[in-house]
Image (cartoon, rainbow, N blue to C red; front, top):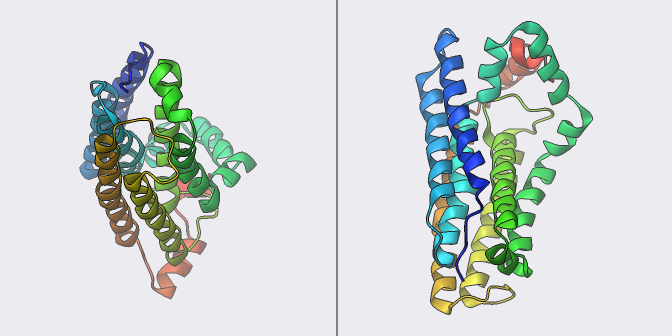
Length: 257
């Protein structure tokens, strides 16, 4: 089975281009903004564009799209700290409006690690354990919606686990490492079941299914190792540092949490 691309996918590419221009403009006017953050964000957009424009092919091409759109691109985008950049550059009234959204009950629930993990892994299970994958090969609009889900759920999970942007009620690093470990175990077990053809609903040639499973296994490992590295790199385990972080948050986080 091959995927066809929905023409509205061009709107996503236009949004990717607009995001690149907007981020670059804000980074230029923000004093002292890290060039590495900018490089990371633009890299994420490039990976996203590559996934969206990848020619339709067999199941292995689909899995590569999933890795780019749902795992690698979201991580790079999150490490660009776009919310922090936005809050440092927009007028104060607009910043307060963003803060109200981010401290709303809906965002607090959405940003809970268990919710982020469920949305991320649940989408994978739903796609490959039900007839949904087959449906996406026949309905380009549904195919596009699946891409959007993987992008948003991947971004949410990376932000909650290791994002430099402030997040409401973010748990301690050891607990986030545990949550990441659950995701690693899920991908490892699920990819092996897929390789063996156990429980999955994938009417594709066995060679393609096994190739896709290998991409999920090794590509997922790479993405999750990068996510773990980002989490550990930002860890400040000392009691004094933790107390200071809790009692003296930065000016933009005061408006959010």
